[in-house]
Length: 154
Image 1 (cartoon, rainbow, N blue to C red):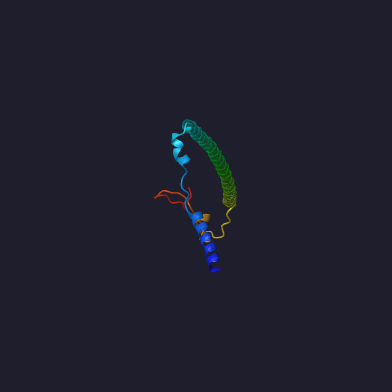
Image 2 (image 1 turned 120 degrees about the vertical axis):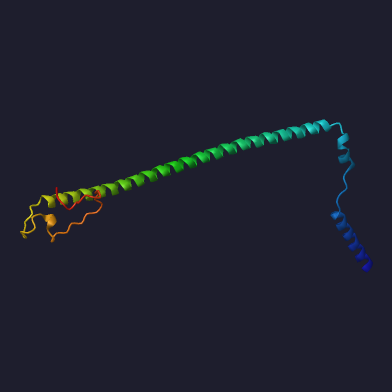
């Protein structure tokens, strides 16, 4: 029994070894160059290559068109967002400028009221409000020349 089983194992081994071997090329494949259909096969291959090149060019043009379209969409989106931001910034700054202008006008009218108010001289030695030591006036940003005395009234 051991002989029969060893023979079957050898047979299995041979089958496995023959399955793993690289098949030898057929003589028909090697003789393809000599066949009369060589030109037909080369023609077929050339047409196939030309079709592949045409398809590649077509795909390249489609992709370039899509990329250009996406680029234009992106740029228009960026432009519109920039315009919106610019308008928002201008509107916010306009509000701030208007608020500052209102405050300045309010201060000017308050100063004008104070200047127009009659001065009641409680101290007879001081004849003008500028010379009164009980009043303090603080002013910022007033431009004057070096020799000009802004405390003296004209």
